[in-house]
Image (cartoon, rainbow, N blue to C red; front, side, top):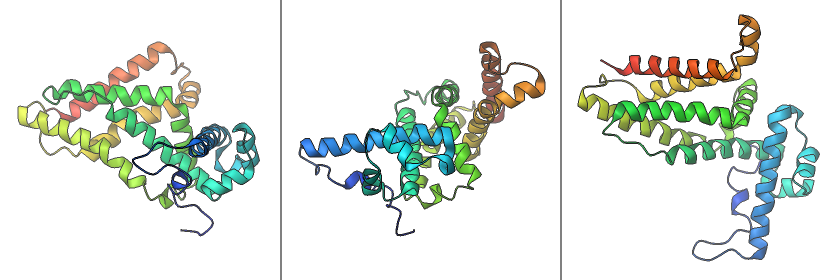
Length: 229
């Protein structure tokens, strides 16, 4: 890792309270500053990409100062990595809050598909920022010390659902949770990230309410057909 990049997560350790005691005024202020910078950076990078987003834009939007970005995140790239990590963390927290009944695997799987579909629509910056990072061939997120950890909860949920379905005979055995996750994510992600160009291509409004409902129903059917015996 380059020495001018703050190791992901280092910023969150500076000036914060130790476990077991409440944070003081300065510690709360430090956390609020970091949170404001992250929120502003998410908006700026989502709009302008990593290359177009400028530190001074972010500090102004956060009502902070350039030096605070370098102090907490080490560099513009360190901040960008923190933004990407925060995207995955928020997604995982929302996914972990799902109430799934493993004894009803088909309904649980439909709920997972619906969650991802809805989350992408409600958090457009998730798609925009990942699109931008893929243009950079993932070179920034590859420097994250946490990126791999964020994939585990998602596949673990599907592992449980698939195992329950196979035990009940409603799903076929041997389906990879990772492959199924990729299928669900791609069906939702591709449609939403390309709906504007595809609307022009097909001459049909793919972002209309009815079109979105129809595609979601199609995606659910496609996934269920994949896992059923």
